[in-house]
Image (cartoon, rainbow, N blue to C red):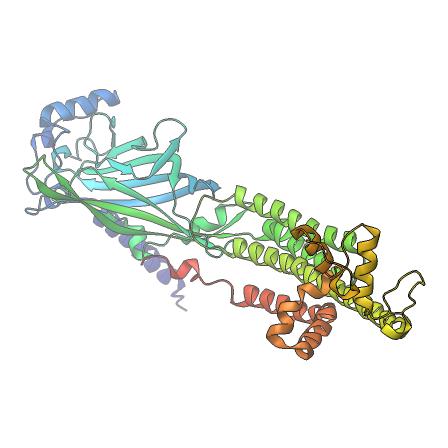
Length: 509
């Protein structure tokens, strides 16, 4: 009996060994393929114990000069610098200052055929001093502040090279950088922040490309999102794009130079809990306080006025708290619009009560005037008829009317000349005396009716009375009108309010 299982196992193990050998051979670089024209450093003996001595021997043998960028071994054109990013932390996001703090590592790699040596003599890697080697000099743009003075150029931790001339450099950037905030939907806003790293070499010498890992993912580094935490913000997508900046320079005969950039983009969404608890809900409560004034008796003037004014003053204080955390902007935001409209509602409540109080005062004045007129008409038949006037016996002017008789009595009392109707000789009167005699007694006009005299002339008495009745019942209409209007406004602001596109849709692709 023959058991084939051991042969299968042996064949499988042999296949794995051959595959591993093939991978190992394929993974080893060939300096003559990557750099057809190897330099004099290829034959340098680097089997030395001191790292600095190995690096100095290689640089001395090749005549290396870091002031010149590496050349392209496959023809004319710039060298390719592959850049990847590792986001370590994003913190200190400041809405008012429009900035954020970030800690990011840039892993860049390129081919420098000047630093090629024979791998059979020294197969290991060399660790270079960054100050002695050429680098693409990626500088961060939009620096606001820094902790260690390294936010602009970064701090290089590692610069490694293998015998094929492949250079790998790790640079750390920690600093405060600018971010343009769009506060239209505050506090339900999404922000897209960008951080550009630009090489100091024009693109005729250096071309920036994404790292190989980023190329497979389209530049998006979603694996870094779960590691970031913030009490105010929620982190969304992270990604990189390639860009460039054109600058006019006189260094090369007034030519326009273009510098390549790799730009980091990330989305942050604001947590609206603090704004909801501290601003939105107290604002709605204050509006309800002002609204309850419609159910209070209009005669309680101090109470209703104090309720409306207190609500307005507290709203102004809340708005000041909101504005403290915002930059000075000239555009509308959801929060500022909401506070402003609610404040306008409370002011309209106060204006409504002022109109109601005035209408009630006019109605009361007109009622008082009507009662006085009825009383005067009831007493008029006994006192104002000329036939019922009692003339004293010592007056000898029976032919005079009641008005003339009154003037005659007034003249006798104050030793003035008599009236012509009395038959007495008229003596010349002065202008002042004539005005005193001819001036009718003053009439008392009601203050409330004077206010509505213009409306009576324009609208007519019937329409004016109808308008007065409506204004006196203004509280009944305002209870329904302002409640419906405010509810509609809140629904529109909550449902239709946010107008921005989500941050993920605003990311550059």
